[in-house]
Every structure is written in C-alpha cells, then in structure tokens.
Length: 433
Ligand SMILES: Cc1ncc(COP(=O)(O)O)c(C=O)c1O
Image (cartoon, rainbow, N blue to C red; front, side, top):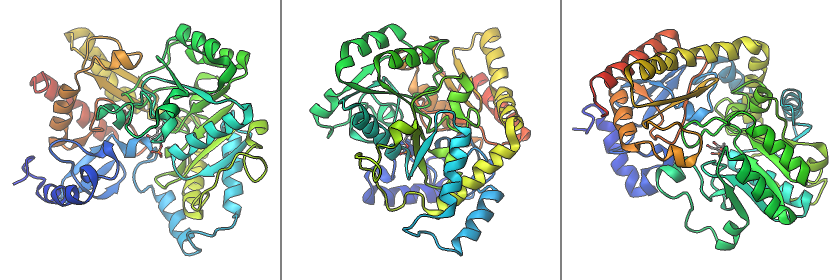
C-alpha cells in the first residue's frame, strides 16, 4: 500500500527509478518525500497520475506553461510540423520569424540566439559579456538561480537551496572566485561590490523577480539602481527572464518595471512546453557571437523546428491576446492570494503572501521576505506538510518552500475557488502548525 494510500503505482515506479537514476529523478526539484507521484497525462490545468488521481497543477512545469498543458494551438502546430521533419541541421524560415517576434516584443532584444535550455542561455550570455568586455568576473545575487553550470552554482536557489547545496561540489574553487555574490535588494552592498571589482567585472546577472527561493520581488528602485550603476561602470547588465519572460508581460519583467538591461535570457514560456531558450541583447554585444564574432556558442538542437514552431504558436497567441490575457492571469492570481492576505491581516495567520502577475508563494514565517536570508527564516517542513495536505485534496504546488506557484490561462475560476477552499480548510484544521 502506498504511503499516500492511493499512490501505489507511483511508489512502485519510484522504487525502480531510485535504483537507476540518482534520487529516482532526472532533475532534483522533482523529488520529494516520501516519493513523488508519476504523471501519465497532462491537459489544461490538470495532471493525471499513473494511479488515476487528478491534480490542479500550480507547478506548471516550473513556470513553463503559461497557456496550460497541451494547449490546442500549440499541439496542432507541432503536429503539423512533425510531418515536415523534426530536425534539419540547416536554417529554417520559422527561426527568422521567431527571432523577429522576440525582438519585436522584448525591449532589450536587438538580436537573438536560440538555444535549448535556460542554463545554456545564461552560460552563453555570460560568455558573451566576458568576451565583449574582456573581463573575467561576474556578479550574481544570493538565491538567484541561473541554471546548473559552474559559474552560477554559487549561493544558488531552486533545488540547490532545497537540497542544501547552494554551493555545489565539483565547481572548481577558482571558478567560484570569479563569481561575486551580493544580497538581493541591497542597493548599497551592490554598488560597493561593483566599485570594488570594477576593473575586472564583466557582467551582473539577476532574476528581476526571484522565482527560485519562493517568490521575492524587487523593492522599489532596486532594478533602476542596477541599471544606473552598471551603466556608470561599463558592466553588462543581464536580466535572467527565463521565468518572467512573456509571463509578467509580453515583454517580460523589463516591460513590467520599465528597466531595460543590456542582455536578456529567455526560456520556459517561450517554448510553450517544448525545449527552447534564447539569449538576446544589444546588437553591439550580440555580434560577438560566432560565426560573426569570436565568442563560440553552438548546439545541435538550437532552433530546431519543433520547438520553434511551439514557440511561435505560443508567442503569436500571447501577442494576439494582448494585455487582456495578462490582466486575466493577474486577476486569477488575486483570486487566490487576496482571501489569504485578508486572513493574515484579520486572523493573524503566521504567513507571508508574496505575489506578482501570475506568480505567488506562501512563506511560513512571520518575517517579511525580501532576500535569501529572510526567506530562509521560513519553516520548510511546515510548507511540505501544507503541500502534502493539498496534494491529498488534488492540488499540486511545487514541492518546495523555495519554488514559486504559477497560474496558467487554463486555470478556471472553479479551480481557483476549490484551491482557496482547500487552503483554508487545511490552515483552519491546524494541519501545518
Ligand atoms: C531564472 C532561471 N534561469 C535559468 C534557469 C535554467 O533553465 P533550464 O532549467 O531550462 O536550464 C531556470 C530554471 O528554473 C530559471 O528559473
């Protein structure tokens, strides 16, 4: 009998998986105690597991699925493209169309290179910035996650924080030494660090809204400070919009906050559920990429016609829907967080409710959350009790206090109402105290 009572097949699969794959999974964030459910199908706002249980999904593949699972527009476009081949190894017309669309809607994008994963995008953007400036060091913020490559696996969020390895083994010390880490939302510490390292500082990389230690918003003026200081010292400012791109607004966080970086990394929503990512930026910087320039970057699956087709279908749908869709997504998020905020204020619930656009997270702490240290005051075990109780009711939140919940266009008001009802019932029953 499965521990959850009704996850029998998932438990069996996890036992088999653990013998074959480290931790039984292919990405650490998917593992949780005592074992994760295994998904068989996904549609709209729902996941269906191998035991036949259905869940309202607020993980949405860690933010990738803004339109929901298996959106008909995306499915149809990809199905048609499959008949015409899945990988060409030559340029295609669709790539040009997608590049045009990205450069049209993302304020900082004058030129773009398509890659396959968000980690590849940040790795390449950082290399481009180093090549462009001829400098070695980069600056990142504590708790920001930029993918699983050496120079950014320092004080990293997401699974690295959940599993207690924000500084991974296997990253050579000399690589780590070139990564300067500063607390998020600390404009003074940031300016001082840039000044101190200016002779050798190539780039500043930041998630404009952190989605990888739960959800942490930039305080007023913080992003503007990043822009002013980097400009003053000739440092390349990279917004890692792998989560926020096309989600906070069509033009991402940079459109939402009105701050334009030099370079931007994109992924997740861009592919509508297919593997594609991109880095983009000022033409002068982007022309340093091979074969035009001397910074090497390449990939067999870069700009593959399946992912590009899915991306085009997604972005065209988003452009066509315009601001109405973003207003609708934001209203859906409000439908979940507003009753909670009222309860926190009126009943003194020991919670922080963080939200913006179609993203939210609850933190089990009495302290306001604004950076890595304040987020770490949250009781991660309590969050998991809350998570597991919701799972039993058929609601799937990301399985870590240090991840973010995502709303999609496919979530119905009935989904949202049910979710709020379950959340209150769990909190009232004191299950998570
Ligand atoms: C902000 C941010 N950057 C980069 C990445 C890495 O993307 P990928 O997992 O596609 O390599 C992630 C993944 O969660 C992310 O949230």
